[in-house]
Image (cartoon, rainbow, N blue to C red):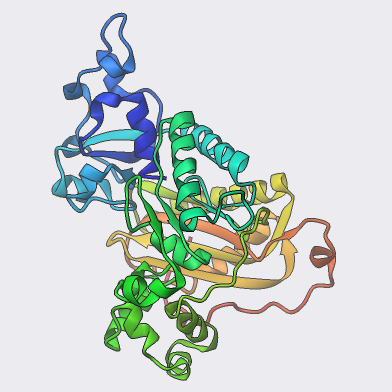
Length: 396
């Protein structure tokens, strides 16, 4: 979907179309702009000048998404709102409305399922679709069916989407970004050298900032340059699994099927603080927040019927750098105290000298509660990461 959250908001406030708009900073309660709603008018009648501007924002929130006019100023998802205000102070800021976004998400996916029932749900705004056996799915390389889906989604929801059609999920994902917004890109096997190889390595789903930085140190900036490297060289420098995977994706190989049903791989909770908190000076406050996050994750697991055995933490420091650590225990659990205790062990392995702006807790390696896997005899605990233990005087 194209700028999904922002596009939903533009249906609510059509007067903001064509303007830089960012979504973030907090969940929706009552819009400030509604105070200026003309008597007898609708939300579409609120004057543009009545909406809050990014330049006036004070807080610690981050951007969830931004309209394309805002992105032209370098503003994007996960950017701090205060930083974004320096790049695009005139942008309008709106709070998030997850209930509304989920409603539109269900609506556009239902449209797809009525046309192409083999659909893999990849989150609130993205899906993979298998066109192989859909009537007309191969016509014009899949372009005809893609166009039909776009028209049906617009008709039902008023929203646009961009579609990449390719022989596999890897290239389809990349192609979906080629012609945004409201575009269709068809990539054939023979197009690998001309259309995929010139792309930056970061365009490959799965190559993150750290891997990309390491690739650049070796002089590898494009997918084509990655493909030119020997498989054994990649394995030697990036590890057996990652190196082999990099070689495959650089050559456009991906045999993953479209999965219509899948189990969650992890559950997590995190929170961004209203102000920076320090592990020593704000130990009690951080401890209470940490405990609450562990209890919330435990409640999520229990409510959905899962247990897990890999417990991890996530920290974002005041300089926006992120640290994560995790530890695998010998048995499956959905117990808040166990999650808290193991998460505390993870905290001993991260530097806590800098102030923190975000704290998160995650439980992975999930299994269904009561399943044979979950009920199997406990094995020995093992540490899932080999980072050096941080020396710090106080832990929360």
